[in-house]
Each structure stands twice: as C-alpha cells, then as structure tokens.
Amino acid sequence: MRAAFILLGPVEKMSEAVSLWHGLVAALDRLAGRLPSLATALSAGSWPAAVLAGLMGLVLVVAGARFSRVISAAGGAIVGWLAGSLLELGLGLWFPPSLAGWAGAAALGLASFFSPEVYPLSLGLLPGALLGLRIPIAGRAWLGAVGGGLALALAALALRRLLVALSASLAGAVLLAGAVLALSSRSGVCAYLARRPTILASLAVFVALVGAIGQLRTMASKRPSARPSESHGADR
Image 1 (cartoon, rainbow, N blue to C red):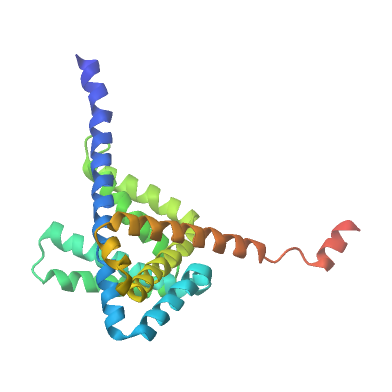
Image 2 (tube, helix red, strand yellow; image 1 turned 60 degrees about the vertical axis):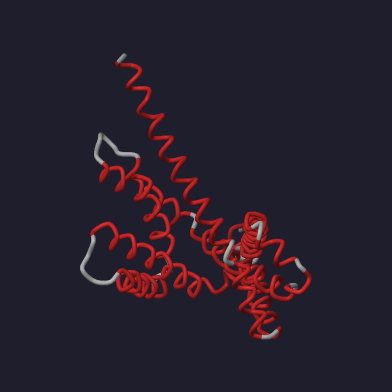
C-alpha cells in the first residue's frame, strides 16, 4: 500500500505538468485567433501598411537576431509585464493590476536593453518557477519554484542565441501572417483561417523555427576564424 502511494506521487506531478502544458497550448491557440483581427486592422489602414508590416516581419525572420539588444528589450518587457501581472494577482496588492504589469515591463525591458542576458534569464525563470510550484520538492512548493526557476533560467542563458533568434523569428512570423491575411482579406482566406486558428499558429511556428535555424546557421558561418598570422605562428 505504501509503495502505491509512492508511485502515485510522480504520476500526480506528471499530470499537473501536462495540465500546465495544455493551458499554455490553449493560450497560444487564443493568441492565434486574434491574428485575423490584426489583419483586419492592417487592411483598414491601407495596403501599404500591410506591405510594410510584411517587410518588417521578413527582416525579423531572416536577420532579426542582428538586433539582439532591441529583441531582448522587447522580450524582457513582455516577460516583465507577465511577471508583474502574475505577482499582483498572486499577492492581491492594493494598486491596479495594469500598474504592476507596466512597472515590470519597464524594469525588465530596460534591464534587458542594457544587459541582454537578463532576457533569457527572466524567460527561463518565470515558467520554471510556475512549473516548480506545481511540482514541490520535499513537500514544499517554494523549493520547487526556486529549483525549477534556477534550472530553466540557466538553461535559457546557455541557449541565449537560440532564444533571441527564435523570439525575433516568432515576432516576424506574426507580422508576416497578419500582412498575408490583410492582403488576402477579400479572397476568403482570412475568413477560413479565422475559423481555424490552430492552422495559423502552426504555420507561424513553422516559419519561426525555419527562420531561427537559418539565422543561427548564418551567425555560425560568419564567426571569425583564427587569423592567418596566428595559424602561421602555431605551425612554426
């Protein structure tokens, strides 16, 4: 009987992790469902606005990692807004929820701009802490939050270039999707994808992954090799 209880512990933790993952997927699905609204706003602005958004998206997908400081600042602001909003909801502070979110966005955005390493650290720390709360260590949720946050923060820092390239490509893919939908709003494609946001989200993620891989390969190929004078000195 005791062995059964021991075995049930990891199963319950795994089910909590799965439920958290399902919630994240549902949130992404709802976010994809708003892309047609972005397309409608772009098409209402006129077709040059849609073309400009598409060109900006293409630049971010192809070479967005070159603007790593700007991408890190924007990503840090988003993470800071989420962290501030979650902190206000969890603690029930007296000031308005929007104030906590914008304060977190400003703090992490500026910190990530002056020190780009802050963005991957915060990007790993926030979901790691939330996941750790659902998987306590020694029966203590705060230990799970600290352990999960530190583990994912260090992992994200090690993958900093990948995260920056993926963030830039994902933002570019969203702009590209909105621009394509805006330019094709009269052909019925926009209405079709508005009823199927999962397809739109899958296409955006695919474009973001391809763009991030391409940017990483480009950066790897442009890394400076050993200087000829150094190589000749080593041969002597």
